[in-house]
Amino acid sequence: MPKFSVLFVCLGNICRSPTAEGIFKHKLAQTELNELIFVDSAGTSAHHVGESPDQRAQEEAKKAGYDLSFIRSRQVRDVDFHEFDLLVAMDESNYYNLLDAVPEPEYQQKIKLFLADYAPDLPKREVPDPYYGGAQGFVEVIQLIEAASDGLIEELRRIHRG
Ligand code: 4NP
Image (cartoon, rainbow, N blue to C red):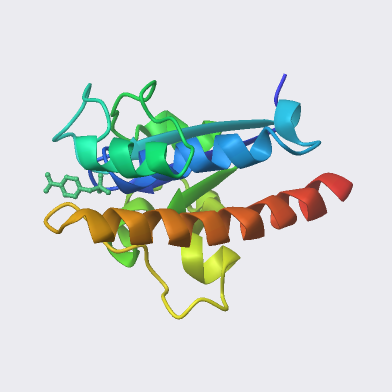
């Protein structure tokens, strides 16, 4: 039974947050925390519900050694704020969308901004939306997510150690 859970959140749940889910699960599988953490992803919009990750996201992830093909887009639900320990937004717009949507004020503290909170030394605070750009945007998304995933794993180790 997982003791801790993380939900990655972007707008459509077809580019950034599924990339984060795939990369984070891959990295977690190489750590002692693997059985202890449940990982999922969702979008604040319902626009792409049921879809597989964007082909460009899947292709660039595959080149970097990550499989995203098992993921299907879903929208954030009210119950996610109860069930997940951390809701990790890819950008500020989705961060504030989540803060606006919290059903109980006590859950505000579960909401994080991925780069700012877990990779504060990076020059960016947000994972840029790659949807309307070219392949290079998807490569950058992967690099930023890899860096912040390492920071989040370190944070989960601290939490787990108590
Ligand atoms: P994501 O990217 O939020 O990283 O999944 C987007 C996907 C779809 C759209 C925008 C961003 N869209 O406008 O449909």
